[in-house]
Image (cartoon, rainbow, N blue to C red):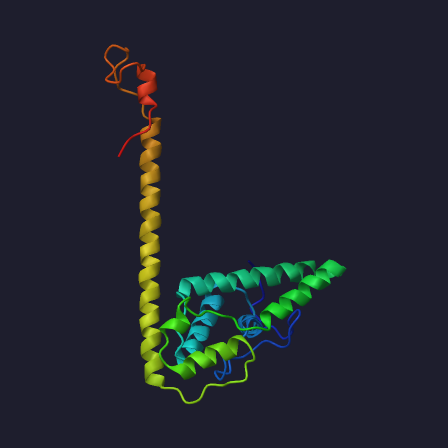
Length: 216
C-alpha cells in the first residue's frame, strides 16, 4: 500500500500522532494506532517497530505476553478496521457515525497483548493488580524498572519470535513440497494392469483401482 513518507500531523478520529509511549501505563488501542501513524506510513516495518516498543512496555510491567506473531496479527486487524472507516468517512450516514463511535470506544481500552494464562502464571500480587487495573479503571502507574531485566527479556522474546518464524517457514515449505508431489503423482499415467483379472482388488476394475485414495 502506497503512502506518504512524511509524518502525519492529523489523524482521522483521533488526536495528534504519538511520538512515544509514556511507559507509565500499558498503551490503549488508540495510543498504539497513534504511535503507528506517527511514522507516516502503515508499512510492515513500521508495524513491527511499534510492536517492539509495545512489548517493551509490557516487559517493564513484568506481564507475560502472547507471541510477537500474534501481536502483529492483532495490530493488523485494528489497522484494517481503521483504514476501512477512513475510506467510508465521506458517506456520513448514521450507520457510519455509529461505527466510528464504537471503534473509538473499543480503542479507548487497553490494547491487551497479555498471554492467556498471564494472571495465573504471575506470582507477584502487585503485578496482577496492575494488569486488572489497566483492563478497567486505569488508575495505577508503573514505578521503577530494572532495565537490565528488560533487556534480557526482550532478547529472549526476539529469539523465540525468530524460532517461531523459522518453524512456520519450514512448515509452509514442506506443505508446498508435498502439494507438488501430489500434483505430480495425480497427473502421471497409470501403469497398473489393464484387465480386471490381474487386479489385486476383487470385484473392482483397473480404472477403479487407480483412482482409489492412497493409504498411509
